[in-house]
Amino acid sequence: DQQVKQNSPSLSVQEGRISILNCDYTNSMFDYFLWYKKYPAEGPTFLISISSIKDKNEDGRFTVFLNKSAKHLSLHIVPSQPGDSAVYFCAAADTGNQFYFGTGTSLTVIP
Amino acid sequence: DVKVTQSSRYLVKRTGEKVFLECVQDMDHENMFWYRQDPGLGLRLIYFSYDVKMKEKGDIPEGYSVSREKKERFSLILESASTNQTSMYLCASSSRGLNEKLFFGSGTQLSVL
Picture 1 (cartoon, chains in turn brown, cyan):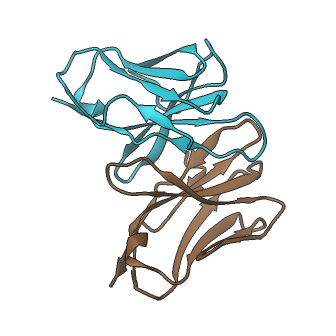
Picture 2 (cartoon, rainbow over the protein chains, first blue to last red):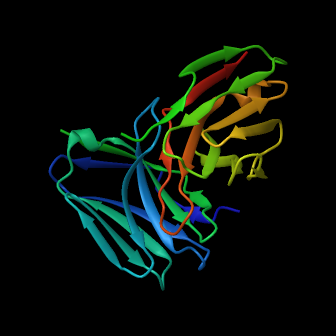
């Protein structure tokens, strides 16, 4: 059973606008959440993370929001750039150092 | 710069062959993982290891085995490759502890014909 879900397989956004990628999880024991970016034929690279004690974490153009009561997190990219076009994976970690990944959202930023 | 190195970027094998995928990390990480990525299915955990000589099954271990004889090296073995094992294989490592992130290798695209 998928414990981390990304319900949107794809998203298209105009360059300069905001991209919002969503992720839901079911296990309340998850205490650390991460976003990874993946280009074709490459391994995923770490983008940004958030601990369960926070509700927001910002790094440049990337912001992750966590809503624990809704078991929902989102990644905001502002402004979106063509180089942001990639597959984005949401991941959740438990205290046992196990990581659970969503199925990914393919973001296309249109110039 | 931290690194997880996978021995091959692309590999083509025949059905029934024994396949070895090698992964080495230079970060002295305790934890190592093997995932496979398939379109629409995301990253699925095959096996992981928290220490030398230790291994644990992930979500899809059938048809695979692993070996961790040294801390820095984690090998994935396909005992008898089948066409449904055609996939992108990703090795990753992490430190033991709270709020540690996974570092991935660049992946091996395996085609089984």
